[in-house]
View 1 (cartoon, rainbow, N blue to C red):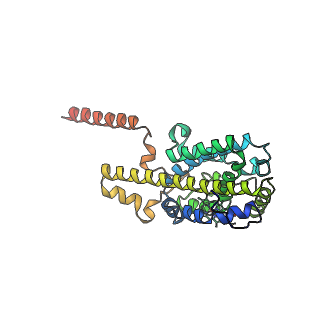
View 2 (tube, rainbow, N blue to C red):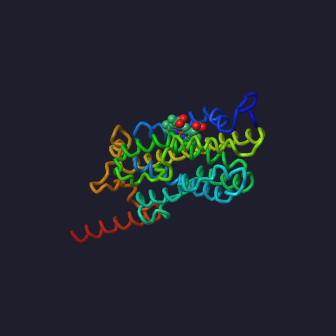
View 3 (cartoon, helix red, strand yellow):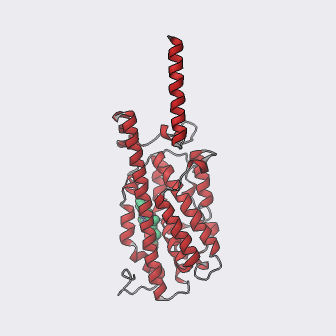
Amino acid sequence: MAQHTEGRKFQDLSEALKESTKDVHAEAENTEFMKIFQKGQVTLHEFKLYLASLYYIYVALEEESERNKDNPVYTPVYFPNELNRTAALEEDLKYFYGPTWKEDIQCHEATQKYVDRLHHVGQYEPELLVAHAYTRYLGDLSGGQILKKIAQKSLSLPSTGKGLSFFNFSGITNISKFKQLYRARMNSIPIDSDIIERIVEEARKSFLLNIEVFQELQRLVNQGKLLQNNHLGKSKLDFHTTGNNRIQNPKENGQAQMNYTDMLPSSPLLRWTLALFFLTTTIVVSLYAI
Ligand code: HEM
């Protein structure tokens, strides 16, 4: 269990977390999904899938955060005004998917596994909740700020910050100072070394859950490309995968442009109905012309 802290002396929880998650952090950074993101090659479709997964994750994290706000093992790191992301994600999803965003997004398997773990921890092992809060929030305040700049540029999002609310922490004036405060608060949690070891293990698990989400998103994206390739021929696939053509340009009015799959209904039944409708119309018009 405690193989990542065993035999090592850590001053405090924040140091233990930082040191013991270095390898899994590198693993997360090096997933295909994150590498594509860092190269500035993320497409709008990929970005939307990413935000949708984050939405389910933060709803769960923040529900459990609320449940444990008076628990001494969580209270010191309870910063709803500064950190909560659910409302920001709702705003972004509304921007990208439109008013029906809630019906249009899906909680895929790996995301659901992460959500289930968050609820389990929040309800039955609340002393471990800080591990999840640390992994997500300190990550958003660190690498997340790099990803924000990349996404803005890659997707040509408006400078107003529309579509990027998730990355904007308006309740924090100095990110670096806030991270210091957060680390100090983690270190003030009344816990012994056994619990520190369990928190470290849970943080590693949290990184792995994130990695599984990225891998699943990449699989979904690849499957989508395969389908497009089968249906539309190779030239269409090239448009979505090569060089800067991965990037969708925004519309003139600043609203991010949807690729054609984004405009189709997400339900397969609806897609088939639409296809059938077009087919029938084409036949009727052809017969009429004859
Ligand atoms: C492309 C992806 C990523 C990049 C470029 C990146 C970059 C960074 C950088 C530069 C820092 C150090 C900031 C500092 O010391 O002030 C950092 C810290 C951190 N990152 Fe990432 N990161 C990425 C992905 C992730 C992911 C996916 C997670 C977790 C889900 C994550 C969680 C963290 C955490 C928790 C810290 C704080 C470490 C600590 O100070 O204890 N990062 N990241």
